Amino acid sequence: MKNKNLIIGAATGYQKKELYFFIKSLRKVYFDKLILIIKKNITEETRNYLNSNKIDIFFTKYKSKTIFKDRYSLYFEIIKNQLNIENIMLTDTADVIFFDDPFNNKLFSEINFFLEDKTIAECETNTRWIKRLYGNNVLNKINKNRISCSGITLGNRENILYYCNLIVNEIKNFKYWSINPFSTGKGSDQGNHNKLIHSSGYNTAKKFYK
Image 1 (cartoon, one colour):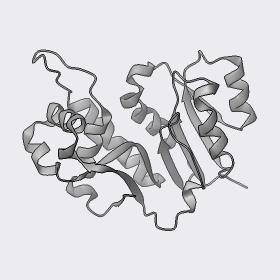
Image 2 (cartoon, helix red, strand yellow):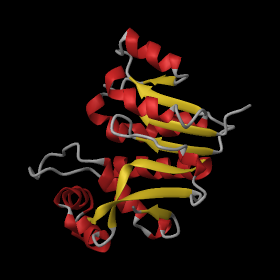
Image 3 (cartoon, helix red, strand yellow):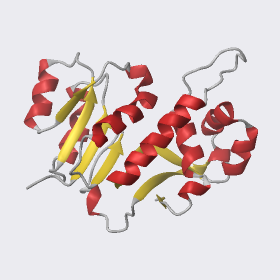
C-alpha cells in the first residue's frame, strides 16, 4: 500500500532525547511516511531510533540556528520529489505531541493554519517581528488578527508547495532589521508567515483556533 500522507519536520540539532516524545506519540497514531530534516552529526543511538520507527532522514548542512527559515526551501525540495503524496503536514518537532492521526480531521480543507490565543497587537514579540520585516503599514493592516503559529501547516500537496514557494520568496526579499539601523538580525519566519496568511490570498483558507 502506497503512502498518501507525509509529515515533514525540521530536527537539526536534536538527538533521540529531544525527539522521543514527538516520535513515540506520532507512531502510536500515524503509520504513513515521515521525513525528518537532520544534520549528519546525530549519534548512533539517534540514528537507530529513527530507523526503528521507519523514519526517513533528509540530511542538511543548514545550521540549527537558522533552520527556522531555511526549512521552507528544504520542504519544497523534499515535496517536489514526492509525486504520489496527496496530503502533507509541516511541523515543529521537539515541542509537538500527537493524540490522533492529524490527517483524520474531516474539517480540514486544502490548506490549514493554526492560531494562537492572542492577536498580533497583543504580543510584543510578534509585533516586533512584523514591524521590523515590513514596517508599520503592513503591521497596522494585520495586527487585529490572531497570531498564526508558523510551526505547523497542513494541506494538500499542491497548496503546501505553493505556500512554501511564497514564504521562501518572502524570507528572501524582506530582511529583518534589528535595533541597529545598519544591520539585519535573524528575525523569525513567523513574521513572514503571518503577513502571508493574513493577506487576501489566504482569506478562504481554514484557520483553526482552540
